[in-house]
Image (cartoon, rainbow, N blue to C red; front, top):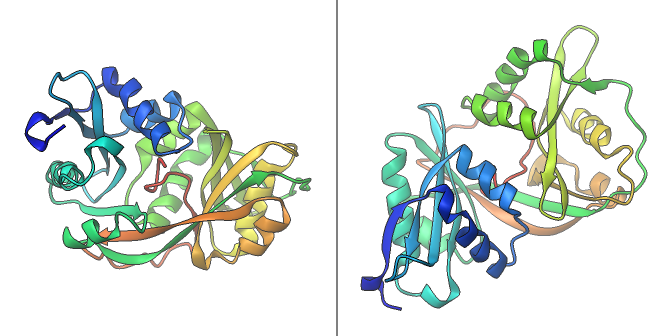
Length: 280
């Protein structure tokens, strides 16, 4: 397989099975349903072999209105690596994003390429997972209701720095949202959905670690023994608490931006569910 025999085309639903093969090859946990959700919210490209029958590379660009986009699900078939295909996929996704600021979560292997493309490191994401231990249901968290959505969207924009309405409304359909209350207003929210080997909790937005713990505890309560994943910002002060609840740190991702965008002054705790923010 040579670079000249590979072509890029728009990522369409008929490419999902081929994308699933690649993620399994890379030992990623994604199910077909996880790929479908990512594609529903994104646009992107696949690399096809000479016969246009085998997917040998993928990339998705998830736009959040006109402000920000994330690049995710960047995978190249083991047999096609070392030929510049990863760069070609990335350049296509960057062009597709237009003038949006870009964010991604990188592995150490992908870091040099992303740096060459103008991405700068801004933080670290820690992946926690395991079989949940017994957790007490918190009294200050309840299921989200339709009337809560505008306030949830406002909190998320304040924390993330961009509007993610499409993502959050999709999570309502495929999973569950919960809100943290202080008696007067919504002080935070979290989402949970089926993902990979079990469930993933995220995003989680709250003003401090105690609020984050309450939201996480809400979704972990009643799930004793079930496999749960939570991705947190390195500075979230949750590692010891999550480990105590059975979710141990197993991997880290490098948070990157292009160009570097000023951090939001909103909520100080955010947990991210998808490997490139939203999906991995």
